[in-house]
Amino acid sequence: MLWIIVFTILISTIISFFLWKKIISTEKKPSPTETKEVQGKTLPLISPQHQEKVDIKAQEARLVNDIDLMLQALEHEKNPLNRHVLYRDILAQSFPKRHQDPQMRERFMNAAQAHIKEMPEIISELVDRFGSKPYFFTFSYYAIALTEAMEFDQAIEICRLALAYEAKDGLGVGFEKRIQLISQRKARMLARQAA
Image 1 (cartoon, rainbow, N blue to C red):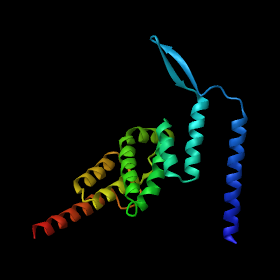
Image 2: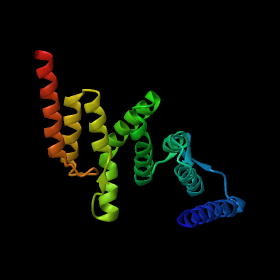
Image 3: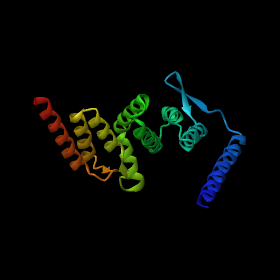
């Protein structure tokens, strides 16, 4: 009985999305880019309609859970919060598959590095808009992956960076405890090598 309700909700959501997309696509829109003359050079400007198209592509990519589409949408997305959501979804899909698929591990590692690199702007936007910072899985997931690769010092640095940002650990362990666990694992490995 529950699966019928879930299936009905899923179908109605998909139908609503495509109807909404069709309504938007039938509206007459100006060209996606306009230009502006600046110091003798013609520069392209992104119109609000083009940005709306980029937002729709990002939403479509997330709706179908397609990492390739999300990575493509990330190339064009400029809004820090939308980029954060795309990174979050890419990481959530690639992290569990990192052991089975080397390509997925590479995608995870690259996305985690890029997400952390953009974190100052993202955190600033989140605090400005919502007044607080959400839980971040990126720091925790990335520290776990680095620890698995025996890159202990880098994993500890990621945890310290999370502490500096006052980020909340999305996995609930806490970054101080995570640093302690990584340090213990590093000490055990060094002891085994010395023996």
